Length: 173
Image (cartoon, rainbow, N blue to C red; front, side, top):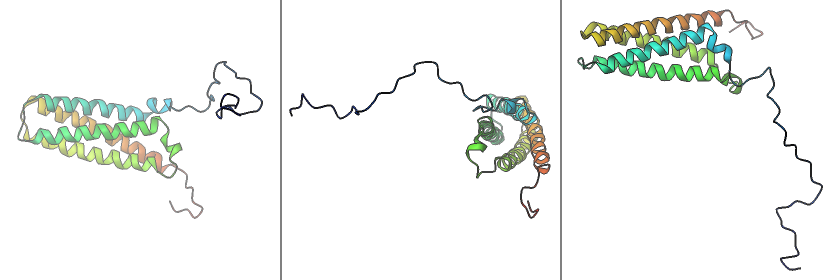
């Protein structure tokens, strides 16, 4: 046999199956990749409100002249709060808790939210106390509002977690 008479190796012998070029099947109606109910839930609304007020505080602090370095503390805290809350929103919006079963996302959310709230309270209080520029004070007040939203979200998480049924057979949580 020469090279012209042999069958190519990339073609598999056997029967060919008909190809269906119709539209792809729709995804199952009960399962979606995005949790649209989270956006309209109280926890989602509180997180988005916190993001908005943290962004406003960041813009207020960065756009005014410097004030003894206290502005950098609030600017870095608001930026880190925005990053952390965005990661949490993405985790709940794309239902990552169903993909990563071993991670307790509710506890991570409570831990991150309460720490972010505490950091915002401290940074905003320091900025309001030590800076006398109107933009810095406005940034501190917006940080206090973001703290209120984060504290309310932490309370909502705690209350929802407290009302969960105990899954262990011995009654220990």
